[in-house]
Image 1 (tube, helix red, strand yellow):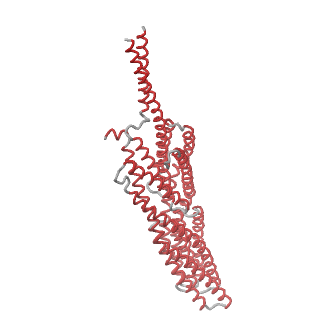
Image 2: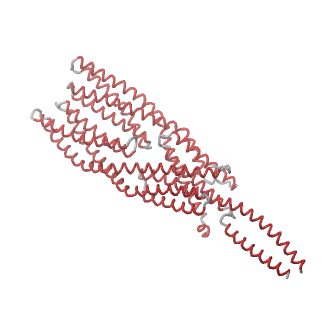
Image 3: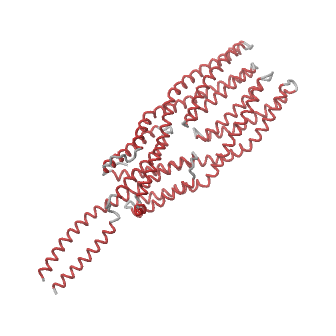
Length: 285
Length: 284
């Protein structure tokens, strides 16, 4: 009986040794498993942050992406970070990242209510552009009329100048949307041109009134310029509203640009972390 | 008595074994029994790479000389990842059939990027030249009004301002790279230069025939000649831009195609990742 028990114990000892050896293997597996989980989270985060970078650009280009979608995505990244924090051995990194992400979330929260004004500005811009295009036709007819007959050269210069101002206003509106160069510069020029155009029309009106008693063609021009002034007067509320919304528009664009900058920084941090994980594996991200 | 002790030890060992087995169950989270976890990591890595490339492609239309470098580096990395996976799976069929097409597009982008930069810089230089030309035309128009010159001449000169302004606008749109719209605008830019040259020539001719004082006439003619030479320089520069435009627009077209294909790969990857989720696998 005793011999049998000793034999059993020996078998058990061998079994336990092999079990211990397996546990060591298991430990190695666990370590690589943990790394795999961290990598999984890092890749997920990287993909989400880059998706946000693409979306932020699309919000500006009004490509069917709204700030609501961006906000949802930001929240989703927050959830991912919570999961990452629980599962990861990289707690200090994740905690630091989470803290920075809160800045982004706050930034996006501030952007949300501003989107409406941004959209309103875009609508107002489209309407103003349409109105200015109609005014171009009227101004062009007027400028052509000033060339026929014996009209003062000053009036021709002023009429063509009005046409030029109107054209430049349209261009400023387009450039504002394309965000080429300084948006503030385009707006500033648009505002000045709008004022100059009003002055120009008033000046032409006064000039024609002064000349009416002398020359007959100016009587026709007087009717024309009065119509033009009326037409421009009708456009003015739209222009005023556009200018009122302009600071909000610019603020929104600047905030989106800031968001893109912050996201690029966050992405770079992730890239660095991913690179450090792959350093020993000869696998690059 | 001794045998009781041995059995007691044996029971203790059995209990320890049970504990170890329980821990092993917890390790299950870390162990990749069927290679799914590894595949998921690979797909996630690829997904992150493709998203990065989508951002890089957006940056390629911005005047940024480092954008191409970033795009190329990331593209090559993703390509290597795909190749490695292809080898690992020993799969004869292409994992991402779009990638071959994307590789061709990437080569195109690399080759044509210099044209994009060149056209962008052309636009900046031409805008500065046009600003000087506009100021000079305005001076001439003011001088003509002061000299009470012919009405049609004043009208013509003032119209030049309008054309020069339109040319500046065209350059701004081209610089932004708006695809087909830019192509039409570049055509108009070429036509506008020719119109402006004709108008300057006409104005010179009318000024030379104008009944003005000799000193006034000389000054106005000098001014018109100056305008002519300025416009000639602009005309030559725009000629160069027009020559590069075919490559430039191909570049913009290639960016569009690249963005679309990358979006396709992105969607495909998203679907593959969803299929690897436990709930999807249970359904299968």
